[in-house]
Length: 295
Image (cartoon, rainbow, N blue to C red):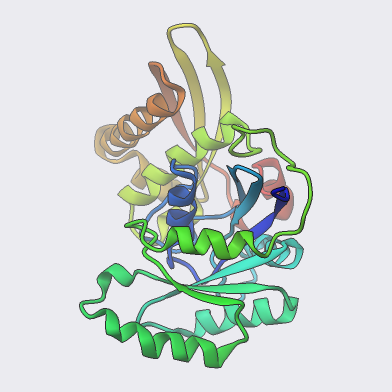
């Protein structure tokens, strides 16, 4: 008789190593927003993957990076640390042909937690010669006593079955915590806000997205039309002008991009209204962060 297993597996690593892409491909649907900029992921995002008698509850975590005194950075660091500490196992993502100081920092977080850990060497699709993987595997083996080392391409879906099998073998026996068909514990409003933030992150430079957050103030799902009112918060008036763009052109483009993804998510037409407001110092005020959903 097949034993029922269920547990938490944290996806950890430095920024931009592919954690959110990995979660999306493991689940077969887009749950985490993605962008080629650090700190795109700010919250631990739970994704449920149930296959027969095994349920893996993956946690996509913010990228582990050098300490920063800002309240936002402390929040993200706390999210990653708690996921590593409280999960049954961790998948530490690294990048093929690249080991950085932030990879070393992420590894130290795992070592401090003394948890079962799989090393997933990501982005192997970029290797011209797969034989180059052998020294990378040997290097990883020398850095830590990993339970397994699995080469993968999160973007191409390569090696993910092997990774899933290794992760599932580390789960404890027990009943599933989520019903079959459940994918996450987050409300719809969370994903609506994240979609808008993703479009902002992709359309703006490297610095501005770090000072932007989105809050959905109203969501009404009617039979033929969903209405979404969202506020984009920035820290300074100059940032507000950048987000809006000349004559409102950039905000209009952000809205168009976001509406298309929201309609795909909800399966119906959407009326999306966006406002940009200045809330000075919100990234460095823990109380304000809490009101904006960073708890």
